[in-house]
View (spheres, rainbow, N blue to C red):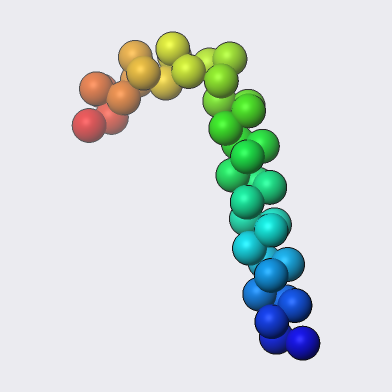
Length: 39
């Protein structure tokens, strides 16, 4: 049962990471401009 929970957690994290990347694509240029200031 713990293995199923672990697999579910990994798949959830993968989906969230994939969705975040898709959302970041349109504003990629804005993030690049902000990166030097943040660093």
